[in-house]
Image (cartoon, rainbow, N blue to C red):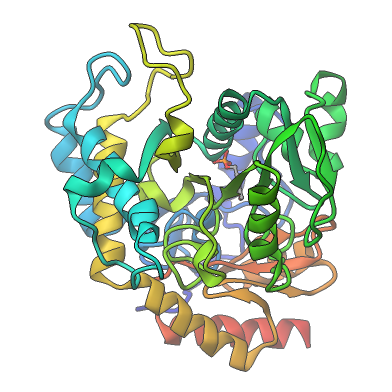
Length: 418
Ligand SMILES: Cc1ncc(COP(=O)(O)O)c(C=O)c1O
């Protein structure tokens, strides 16, 4: 446990020099650079990050919600090292590796396996492996957006309808299928002529009218990049009811909210809602890129049996290194009971500051969040803005952050926004 230690003005000379060099070789749209931004990360552990100038920061972002088990978690790193000496890459959909099987089993058990026993079993309880085939199937991918693509295709295959209902403020990623479902005009406008028109949009928190060409509803249980927006308590249960009534699929995008972040393994458990398909990513790999669409067997089995050529796959599908990292990361979540920790620390924060959200997925309206984030960086705290107008300060730290570290961040935030 350690608090920020700044040796230079921020960003330090090395970070500035690296940023100048990066601008010459990276697409200029990617890394925002100014006098006050960015720092170059050199190493990280737990909630601590060291930059190229030797400054130490506290990370309130878990680097986009990924480092839930802490940065460079030693057990995850050990699993990666071990696997790296054995097999880095296999042939995902042709000649796979056993770790893909193990991870698929684990994902089915953690999601539909647990939900299969109603009421939902307490977080972490296992269902016996031999019963798993009744519950669900997994379709692996590499990024969050790709998991959403897999869900969109699954919905089309299962329902025979092209349309999807999505919500205002939604963020589902930036590949073309996912972007069609993402709401923010900033991301959509430059590509609007290329976007599919299969998405109907309704305001977040409202129940849609049935639309004949739509076979599924895609929703984040709590909107993340849209500004940490928690819907009314009856929203998800009513949406489930709506989908059941009209024979539609409920697809939950739990890429941000999943894996203990909100105080349960998955956010849908706050409302006791079981989806038909769930998309996961981010924290799953403990720092390596891996994602998945997990679906009820009855839905997933609408895909035709492979006869030698999969119609939806990719080169790195079920990559052994990423699977090893994911298995170790899930084991850490269980060992450290991170769903409990997220709920406890989240309650502590909300006692101090009136933030919205659940567990350690919290947001505070601050007006000009980018400027608050720049000032926080000067004080040794890494944070990023959320919300359509960048009006929300997001607080999604590693779930392993200590209360002392959190209190330091809260003191600093209070001082800055006062
Ligand atoms: C809810 C949600 N869905 C999808 C994505 C896209 O994930 P990726 O950036 O890994 O493609 C994100 C990323 O922030 C997200 O928050």
